[in-house]
Amino acid sequence: MILITGGTGFLGAHIAAYLIEQGEEVIFLARSKQGLSAADRVDRLLDWLGVAADRKKNVRVVEGRIEHPALALEPDLSASMFREIDEIVHCASSTSFAERKRAEVEAVNLDGLRHVLDLAERSRCRRFHLVSTAYVAGRTSGPCPEEIVHPTAFTNVYEETKCRAEWLTSERCAKAGIRLSIYRTSIVYGHSETGRSLLFNALYYPVRTALFLKNLYETDIRERGGRKAAEMGVRLDGDGWTVMPIRILVGDGAGINVVPIDFFVRAFGSIREGTSDSGVFHIVNSRQTRLEDIIEYTQALFRIQGISACPAQEMEGKPRNALEAVFETYLEAYGPYMRDRRIFGTERAGPILDKKGLRCPDLTCDSFKRCLDYAVDCDWGRRLFQR
Image (cartoon, rainbow, N blue to C red; front, side, top):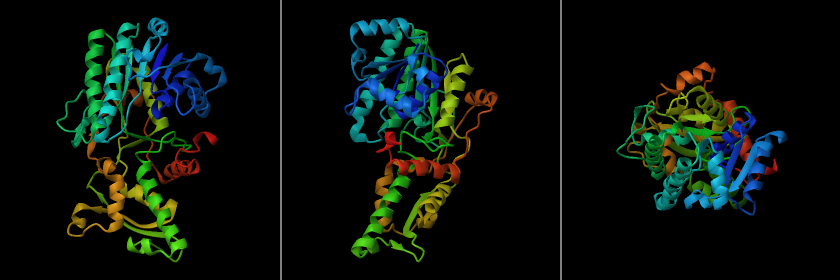
């Protein structure tokens, strides 16, 4: 029996669906939300993920919260779970970057983890899977190895708490004799072939911001005379494309490391099944996606002109215009990931994935279009379960 936390989240839901389809018995630790019980939320997700009805007999849903000691489980239920759990997949996480939310992030990423580890130590669990992030490497550039690291600085509270979570889990599992696998992923986006996704942040957010500004100033031009658009330098050209003068800072040799959810899930499964050793495993793309390419794809898809990638030396002495200032305000938290020089080693994960013939697909114009078409069609998740 496998217990999964965060099974209603993006990565956790896909991992759970994979395990269920492999014939594993899975317990979801979940909570009620927005008028839906935990069981209803899980059932809706499994339907969206296409899990076969006959596979659902291997699914149990337990209402609980990792922020609470003993996961807020009833004592009798807690005791029965201890006798059944062989593995735990811990996906639950707060992904907020905001320092003002530090207490909330620590409550989930550290205190919640401690509570899950308490359960692991009291159960018959002998394998713990921790879903982490490649960005525990912190503020650095160059090679980042598949090992426990101790950076001197982090970009945000999310990176910091995920790194501390690795330290905590490594120490506790070693003392308890529990085999630990840590899966560090880079930025995960939708399915490379269908474009479907449960989450629309990270890669999607800059595009969504550009599209928001485009629609805002197009409306101003078409309905209110365009005064505000003109102040921002936004106009429509003769073919109806929206011209938006935005320079985006890029770094020489830098880019964004992205993997599609289908590759992430296959890689997770291959590593889980392909090694009996504890260790850290990077699930990343061996090639950075250039910011210039994402800009090109975005402009072609949404009929935008004027956005350009600009090296630092070309921006020197040229103050940002009003539109650039607005755009950067929205994207401040994502800047370090858009201009990333970290190189994630795969000396441990690579051979396992090579044996399975797994190679991370590049983000192409076609796959980008599928993902963004899906995002727009479901209104960035608002109509996700109506499709």
